[in-house]
Each structure stands twice: as structure tokens, then as C-alpha cells.
Length: 605
Image (cartoon, rainbow, N blue to C red):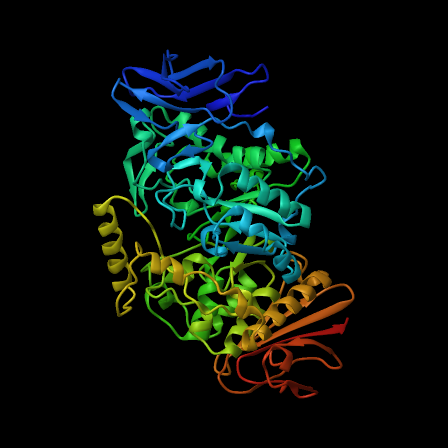
């Protein structure tokens, strides 16, 4: 039986219960599409504005909507499925009809996650959940352990990153709807892959957003750069919070998802004693424990605040991990030399070393870009609480031309980035195509229907990039060509330089699985670096062995001292198998590394 008490819920006796919170309209009616007519049922509300009615002969597939004040037809705020897109009508769905085959699946703990971020619409030519299933064997062979799917809640049109979603309970119809997502999750679990979903609770998109017609879902006290904030701490906010917490639990319950990634979680404005993110984390963990499986909640934050991942009993929010951008920024600047926008806070290899050892580059010190202090120390917080990357949808797609790393640096730099990502003491995230050095861009794309909104998006992108000093024409987000250019070209994976990078990723992931010291939280890193020589060395010490990971960011060869011999050279990125020239040398004087090369060594303790 569904845990939901809102929306259309099929009951065991064959009836369907409809429930909606709608305190704003003076009159509320439920409309049902019958074969020969539209049936209209008046709905009475309780003192808090909640209306419920049970209806016979309104089973799965029945289309319905709400009529407000006699003249406004609106889809259900808790639509499990929409017919006709965000401006269409709701459809009754019975989640119990799907036959799951993952009864033995128990999920994965955070330290075992190797995340692979993907966008369903561009991941395959068909752009559907079912088409994504066909690529699961490739991902299993690569060695990742979890999918992280960009938002799928119904959005306007057919092309969108997903952060303009407006119907939070309805998987996008163009991707295959609710059962399509269930099939993907079920197939992933059969192969041993966890599935996380990116969800957006900091705002809704502007087109097709009808929530305000039902009640005070949004706050007039706060505004963010993302748009109107949800009403999470004002009058009538209990039902708004329930709408979002129920949504989080819904994905875990009805779709068997293993976790959620909260988009821009520190942009969720909530001054309540219990922050919404903490409430969501507790609810998701409680459901997982009751079902006998692991569930995780990961926050995207920009604040460098470890309270998000500290246990609740110690005053934290109790989430499992958060995205940590400092790692990406430090590595990106060390490789590209870019210093515009927020990259101004980084430069050289010192920030890379600090990110490896201290979690954050900014942990309370002054940020020149922000012109204020930023962050706080993360002392004592395990490494598995931090998700790091060298590419993701934001850092690629929020560039004017959407360049991936392979378009910005030479192949040795791409290989170096792969090594530092997968040898770092954190939870790694790969962005689709990164593993074979995809060089197609990933651009921002939409397919709105409102001409004024389309022009506003275009102008907004131009203003954003002006702040970074990027020149040239910004690709049109509304153009289908922009979307088409953003698709990975999977045939490249086995060709030339791309094949070498793919072999490197596979070997790094194999080694990461084989060596317990590389599991996040297993050992605290000891890091040293030479700013002028541009190298960084990280040591992980266990009971019976020591691992040395060495990274040369310089454009010339370097000899790194302090590497004890004898030692086994487990892997280096200049190996000819990966496209290099095999020039790494280990001697009593140190480790000689060619330009932009990483190496991993092991010795007994």
C-alpha cells in the first residue's frame, strides 16, 4: 500500500482515494474523464484545507484534474503521472502493479559508492529510461557502483536539464513515465548498481507551476537567485513541508531508489528549528531502515559547512555526504590556469594539496572572490562524507561553450585528473562520457513554450557569462541543435586516445576496489607539495602497507623526493596502454615523473 495520503491512491477494495491540500480557492471540485462525459464531484475541506474523497471506477489510467472556483482546471499537485505535459491533466497510477525483481537488494554504504552522473535525455539517442538500461553492462564493466540521475520530475517540453521541473511526483513522460523509471532501477539493482536521483526543493520552474493556485506554497519573505522559495517556516508551512518530505520518501518507497541528491540544498531558505534537509534525511533513513536496505541523502552545498553531514546528535543535519566543489576548482585551475569568476580563489598546487588533506580549501579563511570569510573546518569528519569530481553537469554546462575537460587540456592532463579523482580519499563522481575523454560539450538546453520565458533564459545566460569574462556567442538554450550537440558520442570510447583514457579509468576503479586503503574514510591522508615544482604527494598508511599517490601538475618533468624504495609501481598515467610514453622512473633519489603525470606506489609497512 502506498505511503502517500495525497494525490490519487488506489485502495485494496478497488476504489481510489483522492486527496489534495487546497486552502486558497473558495470552491474545489474533482473532475474525472469518463468514456462519455466529464464527471464533476464537489470536495469539502477540513479546517486545514485538506480535501479527500473516495471514488469507485477510477482505477489506473483514469485521467483527472481539479477545478478551482469553477473556472480554473489544474493538474493534481501530487500527480504520479501527467497526460499532456505540465499543462495537461493527471492520471491515476497504481504502483503495486509493477513486478519488482530486486527483493534481495540491500543497497550500498556511502564509502562504496562510485557515482556516475547522467542526464536521461542525452545519455542515449532515444533519451529514455528504457534506453538507459541498454548501457548498464558498459557501466558495470567500467567499474562504477551507482547511477546519479539528473532530475526527472515533469518539466515543460522535451529538452531540459530537469531543474525547471514543476510536478515533483511525476517522472517525465518523454523519458518513459513512472514505470520506465521503475524498470531502470530494477535493472540496475539486478546488476548490482545503486541508483540515486537528483531532486530540486529550492524552487520550481516558472512554466506550468500551478501550486500557488492551491495554497501558500511559496514565501513572499525570501527570494533567491533560483526563484521563489517554498514557504517552509511561515503560516501554513506544515503542509508545504509535508509536500516535499513526502516527495522524498515517495521516490525511495515507490521507485526503490537508494538515495537522493538535494540540489542547491543550502539555497533552501528555512529558519525552522529543524531544517527541511534534516527532516528529509531522517525520513529517508527511517524508511530505508524499515525496509532493510541502505538509503542515503547527499546535499549539494556551496557553503563548505560540515554541519550538513555531522550526526544529528552532535548538532548536524545527519546527511550522508555533500558535494564539495573546492576539490574540483583546485584541480581545474591547476590544470587549466583559468582564474575568472570563482576560480579566482584558486591557483597553483597548494589548494589541491589542501583539498586532499583538509576536505576544504576554504574552511574559515578569507575568500577574495566572495570578499569575505568562507567555510568552517571539517576536522573529524570522515572522507566518505564528501563527494568530489573533476567534471559534473554544473561545472561543464555552466560554461559559455559547455567545454568538457578534454577540450581544455591535453591528454596527459585528462589522465592526471582521472588519477587524482579516483585516488583521492573521498567519494568520486564521474560525469557521463568523462571516462573516455568525451570532447562534445554539455550545454544548457530547454524547450519552453512561453516566448517571453525563452528570451529571459537567453538573456540570463548572456549576463551570467559576462561575469566570467567569456567572449563569443552563447549557444541558444532553446535550439534543438544545442541539445543534439550535448549528446556523448559513445563510439569514441574504443578509439585512439579515448580508448587509452577508458582503460585508465577501468584500471583505476579496479585498483580502488582491490585496495582497502583507498576506500573513503579508511585512512587519513598525509599530504606534502612543492608549489614551485608543482607536484603533490599523498600518503595513506595502513596496518601492513603504505600507498603513495604522486601528482605532477607541471608542464615539465619533475623528480619527487621522499618516496621510499623498494616499492611496487602499481599504476602510472604515462603508461603506453593509456596513451603515454612510459617515462616514469623510481630510484633511491625519488620518483621521476613526466609532465602532467600521476603514479601510485605500494610498499610494505
